Amino acid sequence: MMLPPPKMAGRRRLLPCVCLGLFAVLCWVWVSFASFPDEQLHPNASSFDAVNRGAFQPQSALSDMEFASVASYRGPGNSDRRSNKELPILLWWSGGLFPHFPGDTERIDCATSSCLVTSNRKVQLYKRTASIIFYGTDFRAYEAPLPRLHHQTWALFHEESPMNNYILSHGPAIRLFNYTATFRRESDYPLTLQWLPSLEYLLEPVAVALEEKNRLRREGLAPVLYMQSHCDVPSDRDRYVQELMKYIQVDSYGKCLNNKQLPEHLEDTATATGEEPGFMNFVARYKFHLALENGLCPDYVTEKLWRPLHQGCVPVYRGSSVVSDWMPNGHSVIIIDDFPSPKSLADFLRRLDENDDEYVKYLKFKNHRSITNARLLEALESREWGVNDMSKPNYLNGFECYVCDQENARLASERAYRKSPKKNQPPRPKMASNSHMGCQLPSPGYGNVQDLPTDDGWLQIWPQDYWQSLDQAEGLESLIRHNESDPFLLWKHIQNIAVSRARGKH
Ligand SMILES: *[C@@H]1O[C@H](CO)[C@@H](O)[C@H](O)[C@H]1NC(C)=O
Ligand SMILES: *[C@@H]1O[C@H](CO)[C@@H](O)[C@H](O)[C@H]1NC(C)=O
Ligand SMILES: *[C@@H]1O[C@H](CO)[C@@H](O)[C@H](O)[C@H]1NC(C)=O
Image (cartoon, rainbow, N blue to C red; front, side):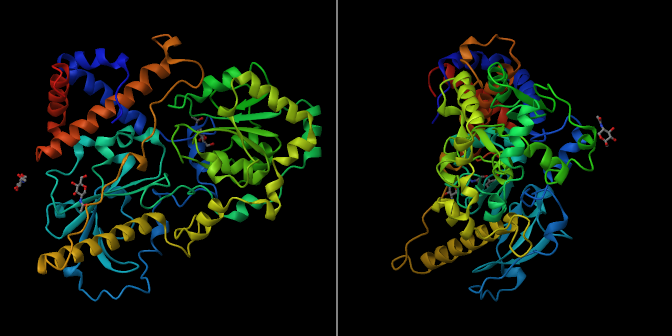
């Protein structure tokens, strides 16, 4: 288990007295941040949707239409002849995400077996309800389905940023789930390449030729682009970029660190979509794109990285610590954390800017044979879900089918074991571990946490949010261990844990 740094001990001792008030406030902060949209490229909030619904958006978990035609798919191995009344039930706890329309219940016929899926919470305590599926961003400890029944598994779907819900990054919470679909390759149904539509997307020819980029440079265009309107995020990226801007010219659009205005025609919501040619050509003129994720976590990699690679610009990246595992080759991305300081990164970028031969080496993968990363090729080849590809299942439907087949297999081996315990083994319990999410404590984008002033905005939000969600994870684990039925007893359990910790018993 991750232990809080010594600094937090004070807060923990204080906890019993201020517990309720503090949690009400933190909860409000947490909820309001959890519901923030992710990346806003434009100052105008409504542009956000347009930008993020570009062609390379994975089939959005939240859009309604796309599910209509892919309700379910029957694999060749499915010879399930049971009627709907006999099938195990999977309950989508986050009803807003239920991937079937219309109605709230549907039969799904998956690769090897069938289930009934529903968003109707009435079935929560049914014996037939084998599994409950949660959407990570909406998961709240104080709304968990309790009591947790022994025969039911929990399944977690979380493809979004770690910042949306840090409770899932703590062992006591993630271990409550039996199946996961997250951005991490270690999860049961990994969504790591959800922002990369295809190999062809990477292999598109360079959008703006180097001669043209050099000409624009001579006209005063900066070598580096930053475009960001989502400013107060756990990765604290602006603090780093601000430092970098002292040493190299950066054109910065959007709300954060703004020093440039977008041309009027691109500020218009209708045209400023991610794949709109005018917008794409505008950003493709830059040699380097600063690509910093909003939260740091292994395998949390978004369009911030894939888009510049698609356009033939060089990403300057911070996000997943193991991003190199997914790169087209060993020389296509500049990784910020490889440099000891913003100044040394700036010096490096300046040298590349002045040396065409060295710069084009970063774009060599555009030649087909240069995609040498077998892991990347294999993962794109083998994933069963599609990104904007109606011929393949959506990954929400894919995951519920994964859970369905797993549950039917588990139920079958339980039946076999009950029938002849001497001949059969009981099914082995299966649960998630920290490697299925496990994102790190947010740290400052530049410098040391000890050096930040106490009124620093980032400091006041993110480390607090992270440790408060650990309290909630432990509280929920305690609720379940005590077979509680009322999730609102969460606050009492958190308080009890704090009290016994203060007495040195925890
Ligand atoms: C955002 O853009 C839309 C459409 O262009 C416009 O109607 C709206 O007033 C803008 N909102 C803000 C806050 O500027
Ligand atoms: C599901 O996870 C819970 C909590 O970790 C565990 O107690 C239970 O045994 C698991 N169930 C199965 C069927 O593996
Ligand atoms: C847990 O509580 C439920 C009802 O609240 C009860 O039916 C069940 O028997 C309890 N389980 C255990 C293990 O005590």
